[in-house]
Image (tube, rainbow, N blue to C red; front, side, top):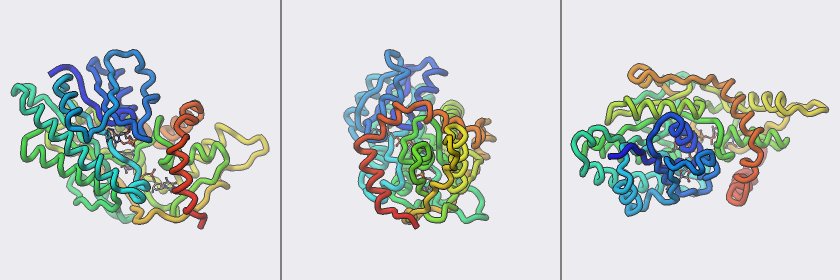
Length: 359
Ligand code: NAD
Ligand code: DAU
């Protein structure tokens, strides 16, 4: 094996944050396999232009030949698998791509990894890791008084996205159990931070607030998510990769449960402060309750005791400070924003929000 890792989906939101962080902390090479779908953006990695330790390969995780040849050529010591279709609303409108990438793509990666790994020397086999990045959505929805999701909570995925991620988790588990492939799975709560594609709640609301556009809140706005700053997620993944026990799953959460309406109000207040209107006026007046997401999970919360106990990880960023950093990042990167809000993005915004009339 060489001192390199294969990252999939490393031009997306979490993947690009992970790759940028990894390159600053480690001397190993990164082979970054990304299809550059609407959600992938090579510009996120522009700080690495000319850096010979990073290689972006535009390609599909469903392409077994490509994946096999990357593994044989670069002999990585680990695979960190982020690539996925990740937006719940899109999975409701067009689920097929989710099955293709999240289920079949993960299977292709596991199978190619197994073939590569089975040819390694025994010490290299022991050192190798396949880290499968998954979500808390596989556990379904919590009531207000329910205990947070732990690693032993039964799977109950409710959206096509969540079901596709659950299927991929099961396949990852099976490859460890059946073949001994050193697989680790992480199930994480909602991330936010720089480079998030503005189809997701936090960046969408920041950008709409900045432009004095309506802020669409689904249903009654009381759905709860457990928010985690993306850099904390990346630190957790590094901890699992370095010290996690093969075959185990680790839940990762922000200990920051918030109702959507409170998140949206907090963003309004920060944007008002950072970009005040000379005549006054509050962005809170832009809040518009709209038709709910079908099957909308009510509450997610993560019990991250296992990763804290076994690996010593806990989030470093508080929600309020992380949100301020995130708003500031979007305000400071108007060029990035302008370039991502083009063709495919506008099409999605038009189709998703036109039929979601104000309640
Ligand atoms: P994202 O949509 O921002 O990025 C996904 C990346 O995968 C993109 O760069 C895209 O081009 C790439 N990709 C998609 N299909 C591909 C294919 N067939 N082959 C190769 N590359 C492909 O997603 P994200 O929010 O960064 O999420 C990354 C991972 O983390 C996903 O597996 C997601 O399920 C998981 N996750 C996300 C969150 C969150 O809050 N965003 C929370 C928990 C877990
Ligand atoms: O929990 C982890 C998951 O978090 C990840 O696995 C997913 O990849 C990621 O997209 C995210 O899923 P959510 O559906 O929770 O994220 P989203 O930002 O789409 O929505 C957050 C909440 O805000 C959710 O309750 C729906 C609501 N919402 C969303 C949008 C886009 C609105 O009220 N209005 C909106 O316009």
